[in-house]
Amino acid sequence: MLFVPEQRMTPRFKLKIPFLFSLMNSPLDCGRTATTLNISRRGIFFETEHPLFVGLPVRLLLRMPSECSGTPAMRIVMTGRVSRVAAKWRGHGGSGVGVEFFYSEPFDR
Image (cartoon, rainbow, N blue to C red):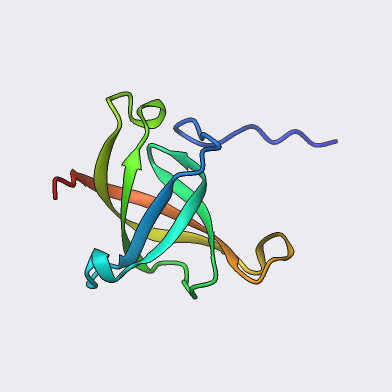
């Protein structure tokens, strides 16, 4: 058996956190809802039936847990890009989608 070491720069947590996501130039309140399958300080992985593609710029509104950020949990808007799409994730109709975060800011509305 071949052992492949973990290459991630930050720990990944298997947490189910509801969030909103939208295309970069669309309002978040018109976004889609989803739930994370796992999350880290640098990105998330989730399942959706909404068609997305690698390289697509997106924004997400979520409550970043303290386990990931090292700070108290707070609502933030994350800007990033779709970095992975796994079609028909685990036999479901949706795709597994990975998003890499680039920038965050507090959401105080």
